[in-house]
Length: 61
Image (cartoon, rainbow, N blue to C red; front, side):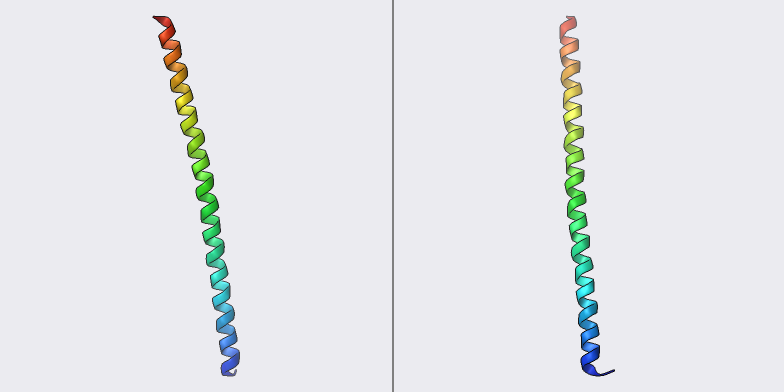
């Protein structure tokens, strides 16, 4: 194996590793966005249930 061939293999490995890092970063970004959407939905439900409870208890007096 010549020096040039070894450099080509090293470059290929580095590019594959870089691509994996980019894919991992993209996956993490998508997952974070999904988690924030779930958080927003849960908070909306909590606020809705709280508002319903306040309205129902306020009508009893």
